[in-house]
Length: 552
Image 1 (cartoon, rainbow, N blue to C red):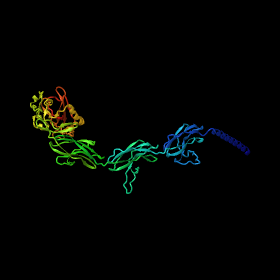
Image 2: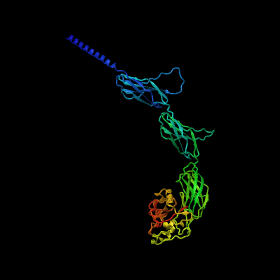
Image 3: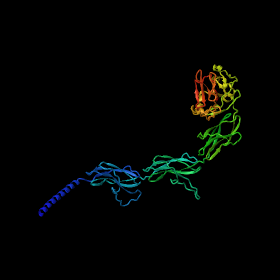
Image 4: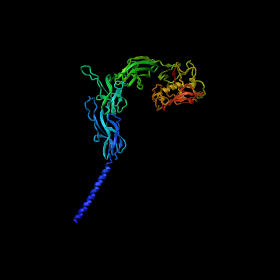
């Protein structure tokens, strides 16, 4: 019994052994068909200071799916000039245990981006691919990263003032590495005993600007400088390799002291005078400028009467004096103020005119506004230049039927004439005996428009023409600044039917320009806004309006 069992077990064991041997031989035949991948290394491209691209061409996947592919590399030494040696060192063969990229799987060709490289260094790189048989490599190739050195040019120094200047840089090359900071740096010669000091070489350890990053050229504002000081400046730019500098330039800041170059008269009238001033600012910001004057002191200053023309940003400007007394001698000089103090020009003297007389002996003052000279008061004359009387019409019915020249006092109250002047119909304006004083005339519609345009246009010019306050104008006298000096008053009007109205609220002024057979062009200003209104059909020739004259 034991003999039979043993024999049976021997047969079973033999069969099993034969099955195992057969399986192993069959499996070995299957595995023997899988090979390593076959691939080529692409040429290295886009070589910069810290990166490059390479890749691989998969010729065969070896009969097995590629589970990983990429490039691997090793770096040699940084490139320096060396004497040739008798024997060259062997070329490194990078492997996936060195630096590598992983660019996916599968049998497609691939491109690899290598980053984190060092500038000016030779690298050896080859493609790799891994399947179930293992990892295979392409041929080894080499490349040298760029040196990363920035080339930069310092732009000219410009806009040199007392405490500031502008400079900048033009980046010729960024060294193939991103610029992370750029600007200019500056220094001065430090005073010290001994021989003449050498010219300083400014670096970013001295004073500097920071004008951002990137390849673009730039302009730098250099501030907080000292007056009358020589500075040395150059552009700089920084990338991961380091900081590079441009050529050194020098400049000397201005002293900050303004100088009055010239003052000259433009026009002297009874109550006003105009002067043209030329100055240099010394490279400092001018906070105030104009003229100062006095009738008793020969060296007037800004503690006396003065103008301030700071709104005019040029160094040649016009300064207008108002509120002078006719037939009076004054002393005037120009001034300019900066944070370094106030400077004055030479004193000149002038005498105001006695005023502009009309045929009745009334005197008027005038002011320069732009290219024109205007009377500052409304006309109050009652005779023409030849002495003929202008008829004063009191009766309303007579007034509304007139086709000849006439005037009236507002409300037939002679006291109103002293303040507001007189009201005239349009026939008086165009009478060939001339109502205006010699050398003057009633302005045309076009001359009115020149004034309005000079003062900023119809929407705002009225405020610049109206007398300030509510002594004569009704409240609120909106927008009134009288910055032109025109000093318009609300003299009201006399309607074509003879009724007077609107004193205190509105001022009306004739032009010498006809609109049609029954009306002429006129202007009005109102207490509730800054507009200048132009009237045509509303300006009936029989209406009574104020008159302002402009110089011939």
